[in-house]
Image (tube, rainbow, N blue to C red; front, top):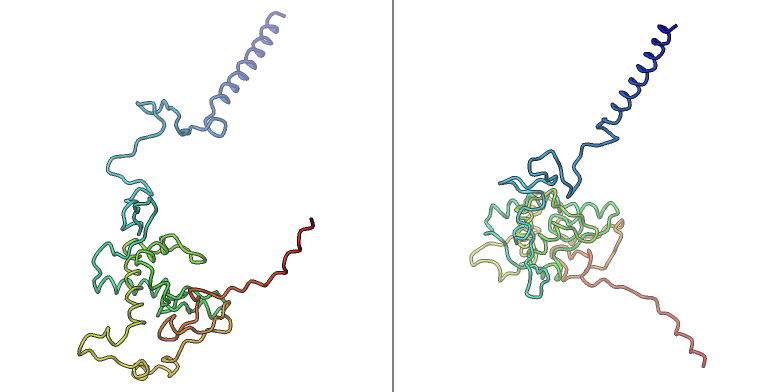
Length: 262
């Protein structure tokens, strides 16, 4: 009788001990219940200095800390009034190799919208997109060269930024090429060095076996979202009608307000 009672007590003790062990094990779980992670600005027993936030390793640069205050990386300087200012200044000498690099990058990333001559009538316009900015108009020619770098870095209007596609040196190269492109498309006879021969565009088209329309004014496709009349001052060749500097905005006349009753 006593023996059976002892066995029953032993079974109960074993069950209680097993349950306690399971509860203890569940309380020590280190997954979703108690995540072994470090909270910001909270201490930690893992490191000797008991700091959870670790100091930056020596001779390393964190993301976003790579000379973000320099003109080369931002395209702006802090003016006397505290505002950011663009400058008509390149951060390094412009060589023929720089212009060639800028032309290559421009033809890859910019011509789909702005075209090879920068008049804003790229291939996207023929597919129903809004004409891009005409880099040959008076407003864009008056912009400082760092303006183009800033736009490529941050985007502008419908244009996205190209900081992921173009490193800072390439953005500056494209900006320099845009300035050279503006000069080439708006040059006059007085800009030609003495003794240099200037070919007519029609003759160049004939030599390259291009159609005669190559040397004619560029027409805005019927599929374009905006259709402005051609303005001579906005680019040569072609007198591109894309995005004039002062687009006509017509506001319908409203009826005069009724007199206030006294």
